[in-house]
Structure formats: C-alpha cells, structure tokens
Length: 439
Image 1 (tube, rainbow, N blue to C red):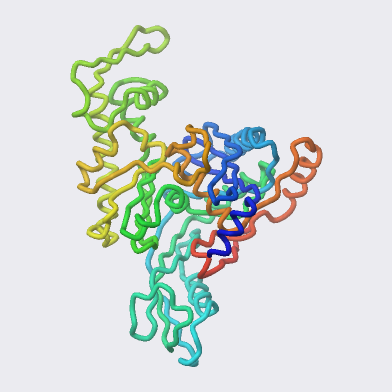
Image 2: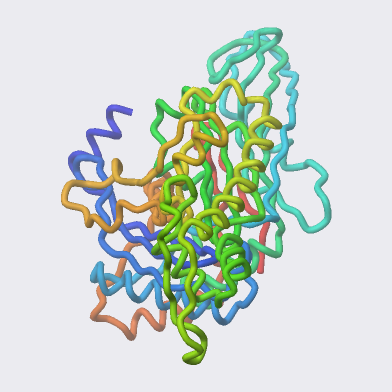
C-alpha cells in the first residue's frame, strides 16, 4: 500500500472517464489522480436526460444523443478525446440477496489462498436466478474457517472448512444490455459496469463512517437508492421507486401547475420541512398562455414536498430495519444525489428517522483549486465511478483533439468489436469476475 502511494506521488495517473446515465441528467466526468493522490477533474459534461425512466433506458436514440453531447462537452473542457468510459447502473430492477458458500479443502495444513476465495465466488455465480436476471456484483461479507467466525481476511490461515457470507446484487440483463448498446452507439467502449449507490458511497463516505455503520441515501430523479455499510463492508442495498420526479409530480397535481413550473417551484422555493416556512409567504407564477398569475402559498408547497419525502424515508426506515443494522448505524444517514439539495432535508430526516444526518458531497476527494460547482451532491455518482476506474487501473489513453479523422475511424472500428471487457469487481483483493453479457 505504501509503495502504491509513493508511486502516485511520483506520477499522476492516466486520464479516466466516468459516465453517469441518470433519469434527469447524463453526466460525463474526466479526471485523474495528481502526484499527491488527490482527484483532479479535467472536464465535465452535463445534459438533460430524456430517454431514461427510473434509471432504465427507455429510448435508445435520445439516450445516445445525450451521451454524445455530454461526452463532447467534457472532451472540449479537457482538451482530449475519449474512447472508453466507466458506466453506472441503477433502477428499480436492482435486487440484493444474502447467500452462504462452503468450501471443503483437501489439506488443513495448506494455507488458504486467493484461489480458494475465487472458487467460493465462482460458486455464487452458479445460483439459479429468475428469468432475465443476472448477477452484477458478488461482495464477500465475512468468513468462517472451521468454527472460527467473523474473519474478514482468511488468506494465510489454515483450515479444512471455509465458509463465507456473500452480498449478491442482481439486475435485469436487458437493462444492462441497453446501457452498453447506448454507449457503443455513441462511439465509446464501456470498460465496466458499477452499481451507482456503491459508486456514490465511494465518493462521499469516509472509511471511518463505513466502519462505524452508515446508511447512504442517494435521491435521484426516478429512484432513491439505499446502501448500508458496517465494519467497512456493504451489508445491504435497496432501490425505492420514488425520487425527485415523484415530488415534482405531487407539486404539479397539488398546486394545479405544469410539471415545468412545478420543477421550478421545487428547486427555487421548495422546502422539505413546512415548519421552517412562514405562513404568509405567497409565490406568484405565470399562468398557461397568459391566463393570468397564479398564487401559491409557500407553506402549502412545503407541506406537499414534506409528505412525499416522509413517505420515501418511511421506505428507507423499513429497509434499514429489514437489514438488521438498525442499531448499528453509529454514523447515521448520509443523503446525496440531486434530491439532497432540497432545503431543510437533513433536518427532516433527523426528525423523521431519529438518525443524525448530513449531506454528502465529493469535496474531500478533490485536489486543491477545484471548481466550486463540483462540490455538489449531483456529481457524487460520477465522481465515484471515476474513483473506481482509477483505483482499479482500468483506463484508456486519450487522443489529441486535433486528429478528428482518426477518432472517427477508431469509433467506426470499435462498433464492430466487443466493447464489454469485465464486470465491476468491488473488492479487488478478493476476486475478478469475467462477464457473460454479449450484445
């Protein structure tokens, strides 16, 4: 570990690119670690997403167009062209389960090695799943060697019976295939696929919080993603089918305004806690086709928002209780994603759940002199995907922007070849998973 840190200090890492395909936005982030091991962002491209619904691609052409626009913006900002990206996956189709694996070894005198761990993980990929589902991640929890439990690192120990608890995350094959198809049509290669809540956690949670016990709630446009960490390991994941768009829909219906105006009301005047709003404040907005102004009480607006947010966090609390770690979350709840920008949301979460709460932003990972606009929870997933790509050493060398013809030729060739190399490996010390998704 010390050797790797010294190497980073001597030479910055190559450029890496992450692509966050969300319900409300598609964001491309390009960066690298500087010689001090801090993240240097060289280019960002963010555009509205119209072809994604609740984290799942619903319109290929619109998504491809948005990806190209986001990539072009990031390329201009960084002064390079990209050929490969790290992509995230989310959506209501994501499920998780716990499973236990057992391996009986031939000789109890031989030390447990990497091959034994890999064999256990390979067995997990043989689990029978519902039709159309695929295993995305297999994450080791803890190991048991003979009768000794609670072992986090069994390599080097001796024993005959090796057991392990695994957290297995699955998703629909069609959802991941559509993501890869969009990336390929945009002239890019998808290096890997990462569950977005895990990526967000990588960007906004500290090692101390993961060790103490923390629930990360990523409030996106279409869904709210939950991931629970304890003892430095991810213990539970869940997807709640409500997000910022549900709040916007409630405002549109409750205040009798268009969704466009409802979104503006939410962003500019919205509050998750009605008690923080004065009763006599009135908001005036233009009517449709000059039908006159419409007046809306700011407190009524807050009450509409608060009702939906409380419903979302009722689901969060239910998932926390279902995980069995309700009493183990010493670090409380961290909220991130675009929905975390709602005024007074952290206060409401504390009142409603009794857990302490903070808003997670990826500020601590940035190098000195970063743009202040990047210290925003909406970039948590993109920055997390970027960090994952850098730490796993999966990068693609950028090209000079002046050679546009070569870029086009390379993109044409890449469309004819396989673009999917390997599935995300969360705990790289434990395993490497070869994919079997083909388009």
